[in-house]
Length: 489
Image 1 (cartoon, one colour):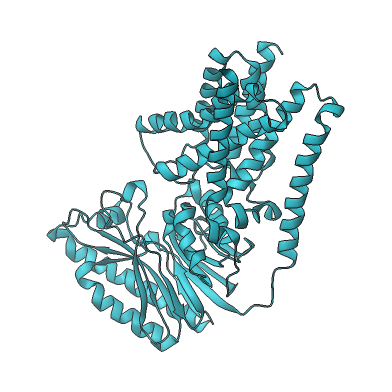
Image 2: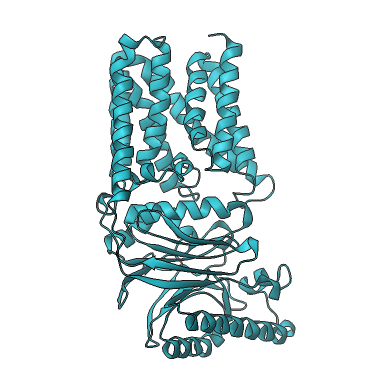
């Protein structure tokens, strides 16, 4: 293959990769992105070929992640350099190892390396699972069922393995007698996974007890731009305190009145998004008493996303969710444990133990926003056999779709129905199989979600074995590297 043709495949692969980052609406883009990029990486000279791959990925990542990564200025481009370096490693591993291993087992090196790098990035960097290629398959519900067994790593492996098998067949000039067994084996495996996922959906219980739920979102028009940030950061001096007390009192009344309205319309569980109820720490007990009285009077469960502010403190923010039952009792009060980048310097962290509490509705759990991007962390919900999972969140417009979709994967992994209450994003009710039962977009002007949600979780293999599949890929890659090294010597 000529260098010009190889560079063309690289450009096409990078284009599809950039598209797959921005939207899950074209799931095939991810499969083609890795296939065409791997073709170029194998056909070009090792140097500068792999440098070209890194450059193409850098451009695709820089453009595709614009608006997703909340880091301003030049620091953004340094972060993209680090992400690019991780994304390039599987192509380096494929170039160094695959050519030294004969037969179909050589096709396993690239997918194992891809999963290993995604897993390492999720465990060792602040970005968690953001950027995993598995999320591009959100719309394919039969395939998404695979995460109940392997986590997202199984889907990432399948996509990368497709690229490796396609290129192996390409190098055999697509001679059917040579590639038949491997390609048919892969095709059969994919069909089994899709049919199995489809059957899992068809056989899912639909006669479960369900309850009416509601999400009351944040009325941002009460505050001028930058005012909420100043409050959350504790930057309120004595001269401003009177005005802020008045605004927060209006906010508190708005949430309590909106909650009363939804309760009297039939909602049994009402949730507020992350940091929606702003309250100065010294005023929290009085507000909590009002909320407990409302829950008791209306006989509802109330999950409050709150920001309790210690003005003047080094870490002024308590980002929490408090669940109150219909008797007015506080079931749990949970502090967020995994801060997003803008919160890290100002937030009082929690103890990393997600609450899973017994109630009349069953076992109710909660996590807050960014925490839902950590599969191993959220697995506490699956291990706790949660019958309902509440996720207060706060996004921004650029990430509203992808961040909601990522949370849906956690619901399937752990077999727990999810109520995601979000300001500046998508609020949604989701069943344990990832089917969206109701959704609203804060930016469309709809501030209230009302939906029916089933109660009761389902057991999943992932909730028991966790990221075992990813660890097996790491072990398999180590064996492949050792074997290639031995052959080389």
